[in-house]
Length: 379
Image 1: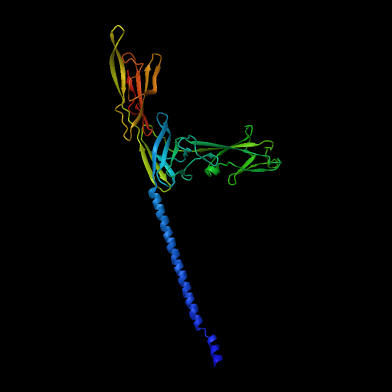
Image 2: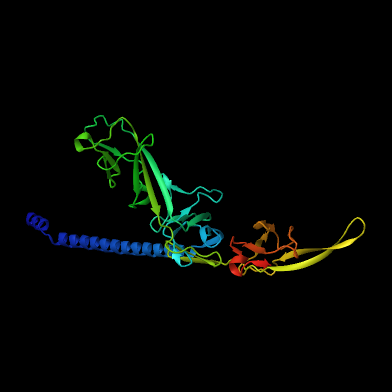
């Protein structure tokens, strides 16, 4: 019986089934717990990422601290904007709007004390919605907005020493293809010998823009160029900066910066308003004999001029008069001061005296009396 009992015990699988079921239940519990933990971890990470993104959006803070416009006397030709990043994270400019138009392309200076533009892959850096300008954290960057087109060139020398057989095609990998810097933007090219003599490109070369290669066609392919000289390849690109009409110098400049976080920062820069008055004065001068004689002169007064968004920093006067042989320039915006007494004018004998006033405010905005209300004229 003892042997049969042992055999029956060894053949009894009921305990194994219970143990296996228990282990399987534990495994299922562990997998479920791990899945829940992973889901919680993923949800927490997403929540943290969302919170971090929201904080970045809310904390982004750009300020235009100065504007330096340049014009032709009627319309602005270019504007430099100094943009300060007040946040501890970098910001990226997606678009810049001036008055009624967005800039399609623009440039930026290397630093605030330099007149050298940023470079990118061997070319002047040209920024747009795809190639965004970075405003470093806690630092400033000066943007150059040109209302005329941006024209850039790049040149590289093609070494033909590896072209050993003129009968065969020669393929050269380009080092300065403009698509590396500007993407698939249209360009013109000009091929010359190293001495500057132009080459006939048609039938002699092919360009593979995708692979950044140029192929010189050998004699067998109908090409006429040879390997006795290296070649210069010049690329030319023209970027349409501003699609509209440049703003008038007499109008306010409305600036709008749009960042990669879709934050919009706006500033309005209003030119000062020039107001000028002419006063006729008489003084009595005494000669060595004690005889007094009257002397008339003019006082030009711009003290009623105003700047609604700041203060006026510069008053410059220009004066012309009839000399009998044409118009004589007495001052070419180089008589400075709010109230001035010009020399060289006889109020009673000089004719057709024309006076203009140019103001500059603390933002760099300028205006002229001739643009706002017209010159002052003494007939």
